[in-house]
Image (tube, rainbow, N blue to C red; front, side):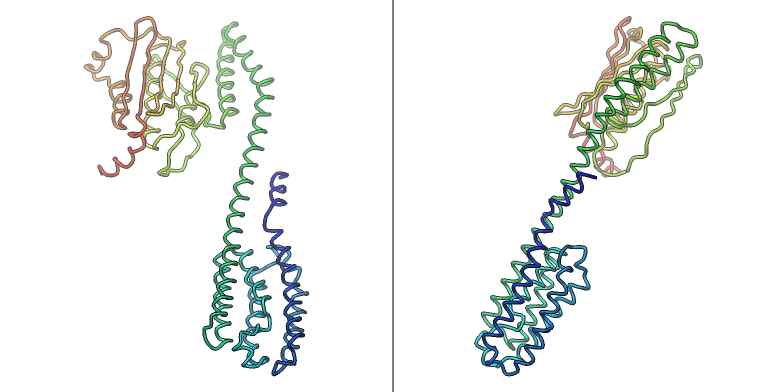
Length: 412
């Protein structure tokens, strides 16, 4: 809140409103001074006196209205512009035709520009252009024909007001960007402070419970495992506010793994998606995730298929490497593509076992991993040495990942 108030105090609009207030008073005095210097030349000076009485009263009474954007309402702007246009149209009735032909000033003179500038500061260049157009029409009607002086004055007011309105719009956009940046900075500092506090207390306690539970064994080991999963989930949340870790119900005797994942809803759009939240759900006590600090952006379909292939690889680890196996996920964001490596410390795959499994109709690696990567233009390499674990390298080229959605749409 303090940062937002600071931005409001830095607003460029407030000095413009103060300048407009001073401009209206000075130009009102200037218009009255012109009348005083040439009142004997007017055909109906009493009409000019009546108008200037209204103009002076209106200008002084409405000074609070032009103090800021909130008080300067649309209704006031319309009424203010009406006062200026009425003064322009009354000029032929109060002044002599000869003075008008010779380029004499209108009754409001340059006070009219203040009304147009109010439109510019309040609503931007489009409002300024509309007000300038109305003033220009009134000047042409007052003169009875186009003249060089009329066109010159109208263009001067129009260009100045549009330029000011455009600058005001840019300033407002910059202020919104600055306010958002300050909010993000404040949120980041708060998250870092919470991360330090959590790291010094909660995470250390969870890590200690995991170690002690594993050492004691029995029911304490299960408690330690749960503490380890919560430690990973909390670290993930503190680090990036990403998706919660998944939880699994394993029935290794039946050779099946059922994984239920709580995933926040994400918008379905055509923009790139960050791969990290999709992989963070797989992290746990026995799965370590290493990822870049910056977003890893891929086309939506490519990100989903790559995350699903990682999930399939982890399923194989749970089923074939045993309940005590550990897995590591490494994410590398390279200029030419994204590489995700899944490695485990299980017994490895005997030579020829994959071909034998495919011959028996078990297509887990062929379809769930290689098939998914092939569909998005990527590749999957499996390296396994008996007794030294298994490593699956998944790679999606950058251009292929970016164009996946477009190619799929054309194919349909």
